[in-house]
Image 1 (cartoon, helix red, strand yellow):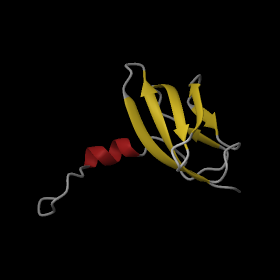
Image 2 (cartoon, helix red, strand yellow):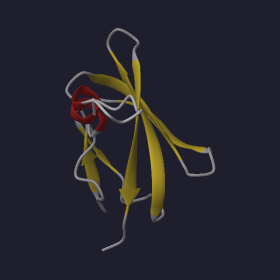
Image 3 (tube, rainbow, N blue to C red):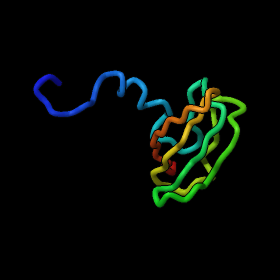
Length: 88
């Protein structure tokens, strides 16, 4: 905002929620531009990496928790997002 001392803007919000549904228990949907991805646990351990053959990946096998996902597009650009794996 104009009187705040932060660098948050609306464009950040538009690109920050690229993984949905969030939280999820069985699958997450990724942007169409994703060609590969890596998933990291809250402790930083890589728990999955894969080529994205479609835009939905199964997460049912992951334990409940908070994960960081690294999305890599066709140009090699990486975007990081967080998602919550819940049990239902």
